[in-house]
Length: 156
Image (cartoon, rainbow, N blue to C red; front, side, top):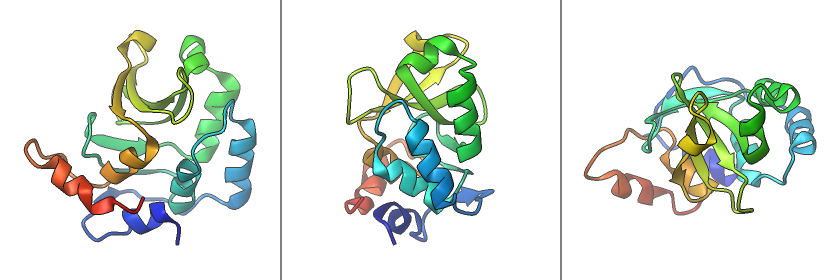
């Protein structure tokens, strides 16, 4: 079991509408089509589940992880041209916020939330790297003790 699956399989993680894992072929194709080398943990997340909804202990408080096929469509169609130059979109919150890697300063890529209508200037860093982001998946945000909840995942 990879480290992402180990963390996300903890009993305190809350998921809604979890999908079957993405196939190795789907993950490899997405990796080949990516404009940059993304963290292996992102692909491990897709191998855990090819899309899901969950609590998120970071703004925007909910994660809707996009399926491999949809991320591939975004890479190919580039519906938000100016956004796709700097960001690799992989999820949202089910509302107005999009969740993406910020490719602007190189690896490790921080995870940001962006209002696609407002454009790239609306991006806000929510995690300094993908491991920190994974640590927040499936955990309910709590104003005073979110850091205590995230410390349970040191082995990501």
